[in-house]
Length: 308
Image (cartoon, rainbow, N blue to C red; front, side, top):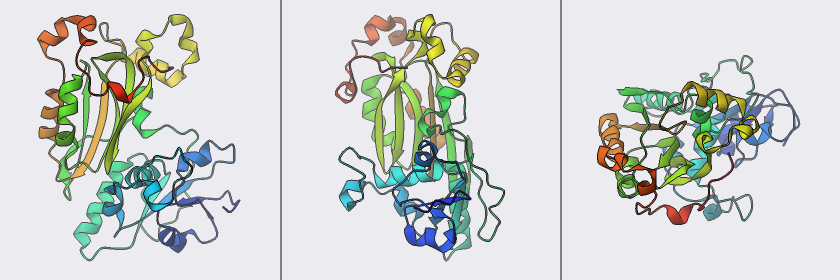
């Protein structure tokens, strides 16, 4: 990679990046923008270049990088869809290149990219990139809500067929009902991300991420479970976000999930997720009972809470 610090271009499609990168640095095609931010080097703006004719196929690609021989090492289990989504979400600017035969479809892709990365700049081809500035600290899209940041946008009315919605709730999700509903929840969703909690594991923050395939796993413990003398060890933004939204019963436990898709039905999606929450009767039985609920996810994450 070049050592230029003016700007860095990123993308899974090297030919598309090469068209616009010119004299600037180019990340390897499987790199994520946050990697350069955590490598101890100067922090130039990162621009992700997306070819219009490959975006939808890329986001829905369920193959792993290992399947195509592009995995970083033996521990690299990323999927192609996940990689492309992260390259878009982590960019300081997202540049759509090329046009589809239909102008309406091209604009649909622009709306989609703005929904996927509302915090990034979205210049048009030919626009100057000199005003793009670099992010100072990486915050994973799945964990943004824990630190009080937006996980996505709530735009349930479609724009060029693209809808986006946010699901937030306090009461825990029933592990069995959620597991049974996963296929219906993710149907028609191009990208979803965020965090949630299960009634059977009230000590764990669980991460949710889908693009092509769905990944669920533990992130950390909830601050409600953390002794007060250890709160200073937690990121200040997370402490502040928790304190501002603290619930006398649930503490900082909550769900914050973002969904984006084409022809997505936000009402149906919310009804599905609402149906996975504990009922009043289940909730009234208390945490000791919740922990005994059959949990199809139990084999996928540890029996003790991860570090906060």
